[in-house]
Image 1: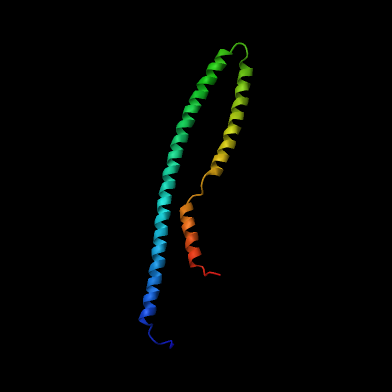
Image 2 (image 1 turned 30 degrees about the vertical axis):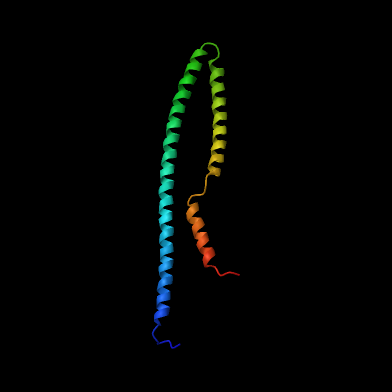
Length: 129
């Protein structure tokens, strides 16, 4: 084939078809990524709202319960009760922190669908051995 010869219509058509398929595949993957980003953002906002409400309620409940119990033992054992609360709250914190780490470790990877589709695309493109 001569270098200066025009490219045949069939080759140009095939090349355009290939480029169209690649761009179409890239577009669908980007649309999937956008949907997953939106879902992750929505999920994180929901988690933040629920955690904020739970923390606020828990802090109020713990504060008022602690004050009431310390008030009950004000004359007889106020220091022991305060130390007991300190130990209890430290232990509760450690248990919560450990369980939170387990919870985070069990969460699915973000963009799992997009990554799986890209992996499938690469598997289809690779030549068979």
